[in-house]
Length: 260
Ligand SMILES: [Zn+2]
Image (cartoon, rainbow, N blue to C red; front, side, top):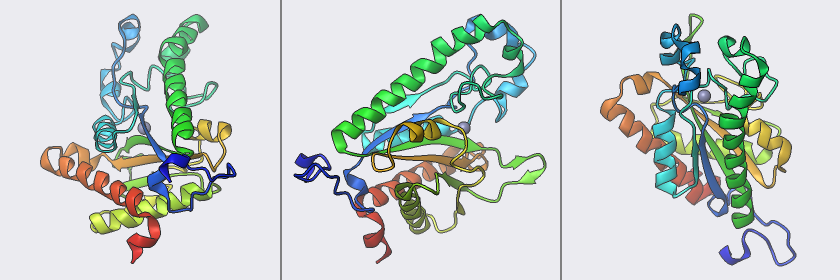
């Protein structure tokens, strides 16, 4: 089956909804760090607290992405430049692509930031995703994120969020299976779909969906509540292991076997 690269002799894709193990996996992490490169550091001297907050980066997202890439020997693309310099999970033209201090700079500065940080990241991610489709017939792209436990005074009621586009059946199936696997591996965790954000909103996965057919591309954002990461230590290490194990089950078994 592997020799066929996900295609039948007639060239038609033959994956069933649960053949996840046959697909290529690519891991990305757009909000991995809060680094501000030297040429721009003066613009952020008064904003260190913001850089250190959830608005500067996604705590834990990078270590989660690395754990997934290591466990599955999957290609990994990460960024440690702060989303306040340029948000790699926003489209060019989005009003929140840059922090306001960057907005007030001349357009050449923003062009330079796009050229040095944004475009290479997108190009690398696109190369790996397209290569995985060539090699495996289909790709599952996991984008690793984390969310603040409380926003504007409202406590977020989930431990893990799986964000996807409900109009793409492959993404619906995959997230349903992963959610079921998480329930088995960690019954105490509250896993919600398209929470705390809608998966079809602007972002890297949405960008890929506009370019790639549903049969080729399954894009999911993994969102982890930062309350688990703030506790750090063994708890956070264990949670990463649980998430890896649940994904292993999802890829190995698919839905049908898992539910029996
Ligand atoms: Zn994020």
